[in-house]
Image (tube, rainbow, N blue to C red; front, side, top):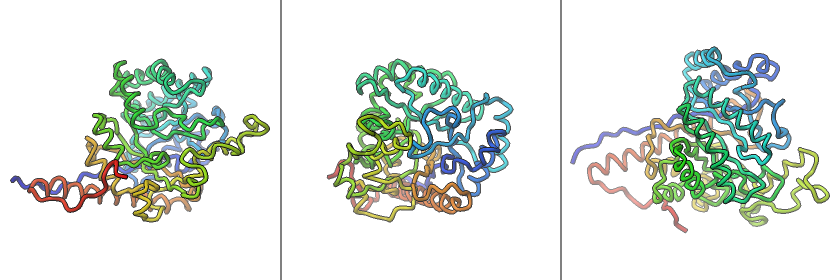
Length: 413
């Protein structure tokens, strides 16, 4: 037998810039927009990250959702009120060279199927500007939601996806880009009772969307930016989801990762189940949605009564919770990705996304050691998984030596 050398392949570690929305004070960045990107590249280098996922959003003066109604405030680190041109791109490129930190992709999370035509067009136009900025900055992908038309049922939303979202995929194809769908169901996006407000929320849906895109000639443009926190929210586990995709022949859909966890509150599940709070939330007043945007935050009780986001490394090591799918088993997450998906691990981005509420400190010096620790934890977990995979699946397998034990099994109950 040929001796296989030990060659672990590590993923690219990054951080989403929404972790600190106002790293550059608003009065500075509004006058000099690209200063925010430069300072985030410098901050990422201090944190020990290799890449940033650049957060884009409509400027607060242009946004349709008030910040007080948001569970996780967005960041317009990439400010596109003015066109992003070659001169701006050169400035970002110079900062990237100086810091040694690259850009993984650009992230713009919004409802691209909004039922109101004017808002839908506004968001689609902005997304195309994001596409153009991505090309100028030399990144090959954008990350975002699909969204949901609240006036239509799920099957009709597939028709709406084909009519109105596929043109965005066609625009991405024209620019040589991939659109990576983040799968959060966004249960609190609306004061209605729908839990699934982003139709790209689970493997069965990803396959349905890809089939439509493939039929329209843009199948290569739609991929998934997998986030295990949303799987935990819906009672799923990473290994079983990846096994399902592999069995169905769609393992290739996973094209990047958010590293964000979820910790389920057993009392919350006992009270409301995995559908979250369905009544008396406080987002409705006197039989109608409240006129106060701050009350709309209560719509998120469909999620927050049963779980809380985890910044990787901040939740206790809990083997029982891993087996119950009540928190993310990070080591198995990274092992399963290598064992079940056709990934090129060395060219796959692993992006830390910070949404752990008690630690969402908007103070650079206080937040810095928190993010440093989480990024370091993420890197070491990935390295451990890479080493286990290389040793077991390559070195030992090459010499016909069996791997001990069973490990976590997909679909097991």
